[in-house]
Length: 493
Image 1 (cartoon, helix red, strand yellow):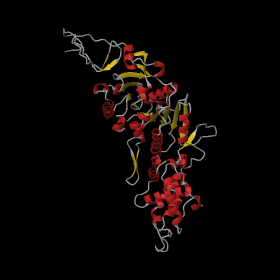
Image 2 (cartoon, rainbow, N blue to C red):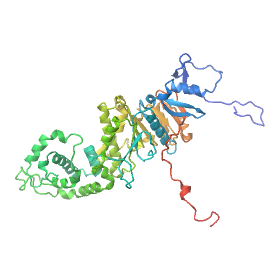
Image 3 (tube, rainbow, N blue to C red):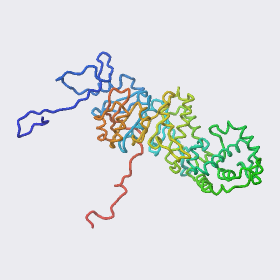
């Protein structure tokens, strides 16, 4: 059958359309019902739903002033759609979309609404594009240094003692056979030297030709403290301590077991490790970790923020280096700290949303080698168990296929912008549950700021146009036409 009549044929138009029945409204109560309890009969008329009817089905009569004003309907710019914080963040949220699709706008809009509702959120800004956020947002910078005396940015540090042993191993990358045991012993010796100053007058634990008993007694007495989290030690003496670990186990050619012997040839195998340690410790980009003196520790900043009336804490990581996987390790360590706070009940009466931009950089990765491996799993654990403690996540990414399936399956709300890659669309379709292939087929055609909202509590997938944030993220690419100028006229050869 033809859709349009043609000039050379005398026939009727027979347009065919496909209609999906997504939800129903109870006429008595006005509540939206998933599915279709009573299907329409053949030959019944079809009418386009009024925008206010769609708004009613989605919002379900909640209080607008206590809801998040997120978007409006594309075909009715005067009809705003609001969602409750519970619907958006109660079971975690994912904001997905390729570059230029409006993902950053959505995150900025949600942050502004959290501020308006006096909520709590911690924003991990991987690229610095959200520095334009202002009212109700505290900005701290992890890494980097002031540009001049007029630079009023708040710089914070993440002290090395807040990293666990596996993190340190990934940073310094020791070889497994010879260097890893010496590094492990050196870290333990430096911690003991800090706890027992009398054993280490120079700050490090001397072992060459020294008696073993005082050290062994101190190790026994401080066993619990040495294994505790956050033990202080002087990491600037780590290279020197490794030299002290390269020693024969017994003095006098193995006859005197009460003392360590002379320096051994093991030092030859640790020269490269010592060089890496000294270079890394001197790097100005790593000063926020290895020389945090004068900088407020980020865990303390987080504690103060949770007790304050501030709504959003933005942690800028734009100046944190990629070398040695520093950015991934530190972010994972902060997530581990937040999860530890959650398990102690910190967020039960103060629910907080952790917003992780560029989430694909910090999930489903393993760093290091077979001798020292760290899995970036802290934010995955928050997604799996944080909700019951009052700590939920908002993951923003342009690569849904790089997010672990078991993490995406925990998301109760999806705000999906333009997705071109077929694998990305399949991942979203599988994870959301309420979006089928026909709805996913529209994702490549969405314009900037347009999205499909799919949630566990939503009666149907809803196409929307996200409201523009007041503070636009700085996420535009380079303007080539403004910087590339021809050096000759077009008609010249």
